[in-house]
Structure formats: structure tokens, C-alpha cells
Image (cartoon, rainbow over all chains, first blue to last red; front, side, top):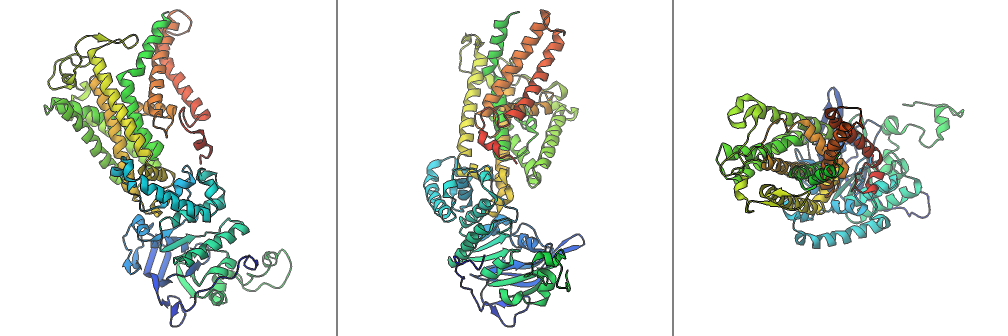
Length: 300
Length: 338
């Protein structure tokens, strides 16, 4: 995909870190800092992050094997789950014990691995729901339409503009449930933009999306950065990570095991061991042994 | 067999106080379940609190009927808070279990002889509607609902709505309350507030991730729907004596039947559903015994009267299978049911 002539190579942000690159390296301008965040489920330590910083106005990828704690870490950062210990802050303000909806109001918006389109609401209503400025959402104001109809028109205009960008404007009066899986991913991302976020956290935005649509999603993610937002995303598609990420954080067994620019990180032996496997560029048939050949070295 | 009489008696249920009471409580359920996604199986409890709050307000505290009515409404708000604060963090099905249990707790407390001095225990309460008393038990009380009746004594209307001044008063008050309630609910669900609660019905985590205080919204929905239930209970109490044996779980299920008949996520469905439910109940309840008495059915008249429940149950099954969105619901909404 990345080699398609249509999508020009994005400009990568560099020089994001301070000092020697190692897990937990300090960033020049971190938007999100997590310190000693630890979440245990019974005897299982799902997340145990000593220190990690997310650089501002850059695209950071969070990769790692299944069960590495990426989604749990997302949940902890966004208030959908509370850690057993640790502190973490967004824009310098602590997010400990802040409930999920307040985290969202501060400008940290997330999407979900299993897309959560609000099925029996129209696409337009899904979008309007994203707006944070509608006073008519208060019970007391909702009974008096003259208090909120003007705002509603403004929100609708904004939603239409974003929907056009995501090519969903023709679907605006359809139920979100009638959209395809890929369109729902687009809708979820578009809806998140309605909140004017500072940091967008995308949990596997490309999972189950066909190559052509992946490309347009890539453009949208790059567009977020161009608009001054910060993106943190979980993804298993390494082509995509290499293509758009400015910084990559690798998690395994709940810990951050490596960090760095995409190309360097993917050469890191620890990352290859824990996640990529040594055959990432080889035909799968060879790796699984269905096609004979080159002898398989260490494989997890 | 007086088939015309059967038709007219059934038709009288179109505007009967009980029908209005059901429509109010079902509207509350529509807000809870159809719009907010809250599986409330304890509506009978809210109704009981409305009815008993009013009756106790008049009889024990000597309040005029309109203040006493607020006691009933306040009781339902307190109940919604007690119920909601610990349980709204739970997922749907758990809420259903908690509400059904809570409604039973309310009913059993009202039945208990421990509070017999106030609640009347198994006898229930009567005589709180003041001069003219209740329809079924005309005793003289003080400060009751009937004192507010501006209609002079007499019989008004036409068949099947040929009734005395008291029934008309009750009917007009009921229709007014219902009209206001329907308007308020319609306004609410078509506002941005309504959009948020519909979003919560679909997926509360998604709504939470967009910065909405889901818990506060759910609590508001529970309270407003609960107040509508209490208004339904008030209507029942205005009409007749209160007795804990009325506010049983099957009352809740009748309300659910009416809700599904009309359409869960509609504003007028609850009213239509309640009317159909009551008219049909009355019609079959009169028709079958009449058929049995002329030998067209192989049952005694008493047995025949019970067959209506079988028919209503069967109709409900057919409805849920073939028209799950109810009579007024949007077919499109059901195309995508998960």
C-alpha cells in the first residue's frame, strides 16, 4: 500500500526525544506522561509501564503482541479503567481518578477496537452527539428549543463538513447500523473529531478494513496531525505503522520494551523476538512450513 | 347474547381512568426502555409509591389532595434515586433483576402489618378521595381529590361514555395529565438530551468516550420515567381504593405488553398500546363468557373469562415475532436489531 504512487510519502516529525533512545525516554514536548502505571487482574499483571511519554503533534504507534496490554493501557489512560497504582497526566494535569467522560472533555478522545457506532441513530445524529457545546443536552434546557436550535444548526454544518471529508455525507440520514464495517470505522473517527480533541487515541483503526479504505484512513490520520492534533494508535499492520508513525512504542507482557523511530525500532532484536518474528517479509507459507524452505530459525 | 352491549362496554375502556393510568406508566417505560435502554421491570413499584404516597398524604398527614399527590411523586423520585445510584453502573439485565426485586420490596412493605397503621396492610387504604369517596367505595373523607371537582352533580356524555360528574372529572384530569406528559416526553426525546439518551441505549461506552456523563443521564431517565409511573399510580388512586395486591409484578408485565403493542421507542405507542390492551381485555373478557353461556364454548363462564389471558398472551407472541417494533414503531429500526 505504502508503495502506491497515489499516496505521497508523509513528512515525518523527527527529533521528538531527549537524550539516548531507550524505553521511557523523555520527549521534548510530551502531551501525555504515564509514570509507574500498573494494572493487575488477580494474579495477572496486564500493564506495568514504568515511564512513557507521548510526543505532542506527532503520530505515535503502540505495537505489541496480542495480550501485551495495549488496549488495557488505553483504557487506563482514558479513564475507562483505573490502575492499581501509578500516575499519569495529560497536558500537565493529572488524570488519576478522573472519570472517562471528564477525560474526554479535556480533549483526550479514544475510539474502540470493536467499533462502537450507535446503530439506531442516524449518521448525522452520531456526529451531533460528538459535539461538546450543545447546551440542549442539559435536561433543563432540552424542553426549550429556542435555547438550542441555533447551536444545532452550527453543529450540523460542522458535522456536514467533516462527513464530506470522510465521504459519508450521502449517508447522513441512514442508520449507522446500515453502514459497512469500514464505514463505521470512518464514522467513529469522524465522530471523535466533532469533539475537537487534542489527542486522538485510535484502537486498531485499520482492523478489518480493505486496502483501498486503509489508504483513505491513513490520509485522515495524517490530516489530524496536519491540523495540530496528536495521534496515538494501536495497530498490527506494520506497513502502515512504518508509513505514517513518527514514533513507535513497543509493549510486551504489559511493559514498554522498546521505543524509537519506526525504522530503527523494527530492527531492534527485542522487538523482532517479542512481536514481529524474524520472517516478517517472507511469504507466510514459508514460515508455517507449508512451502519448504529456508530453514526456520528462532520463532515465537 | 348482547353483542352490542359487549361492544359498548369494551369501548368504554377507551377513555377509562385505568387506561389513562396504564398509558402514563407505559409512557414511563417507553422512556426507560425504548429511549434510554433501561430494562425496568419494577414499574409497579413506582406506581404503588405514587398511589400510596397520595393516599397516606391525605389520610395520615391531612394534606390537601394536590400536596398529597406531590408526596406520591416525591416518593417515586426518592425510590428512583435509591434504586439508581447503586445500580445504574450495572449493565441492563442486572438492572432488570434489581428493579423487579425492589418493586417487590415496596409491595411487601406496604402489605406488611408492621406499618399497618399507615398503609392499611392487607386491607389497603380507602376514603382518601374525599366527598364522594372512591368509585367503588363511596366514603366521606377530607381534603381528597373529589373536593376539587368543579363539575355539578349529574350524568353526562353519551353511550359508551355516559358517566357521572366524578368519572368525568377523573377522566378530564387524567387526559390533561396524559397530554402534558406526552408533550413533555415528545419534546425531551426530540431534543439533544434525547439524542444523548438514545446514544446511551445503543452503547454507553461510546457516549462516555464523547464526554457525556452517562450516569447522570441514566439517573435522569430513571427519575422522569419513575415520575410518570407514579402519575399512573396516582390516577389509579384517584379512581379507587389502593391495595398492595394491585401493584404486583403482573401489573408491570401488563405495562410491558402495552408498551410492546404500541412500540417501545415511540411517544404515542404507549397510549395506543394501553387502549388496545384494555379494550381487547374487556372485549374478550365479556365475549367468551357470553359465548359459553349460550353453549358456543365448551367451558363454564368463569373458565371462559380466563381464556382472554391465553389469547392476549398468544397475540403478544405473534406481535413480538412478526412486528417487534410495535404498531407505531419504525420498521427500519428493527431491520438492524443486533
